Image 1: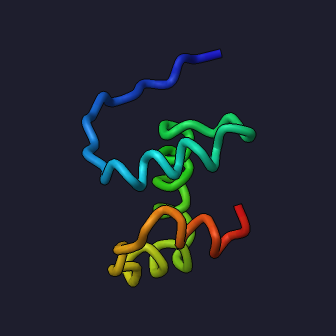
Image 2 (image 1 turned 180 degrees about the horizontal axis):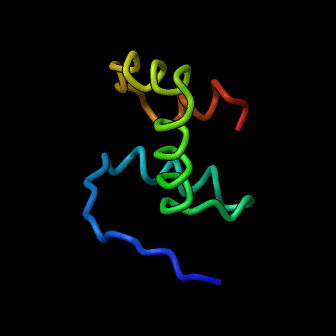
Length: 72
């Protein structure tokens, strides 16, 4: 199997968002790298996903509001 080439990058995230992400994904073993790779793939291949990303502007929330809205 050919090894895929990867680029190394640094991403700065809001601390609360990242902490909430870690809590929500503890059971699924999804990590940030997997999420980013899947998100980039969907962005490149799915116009509805790309539209959703572009229209998502307001990311002001508290962690508890987000967790409650998705039912933990």
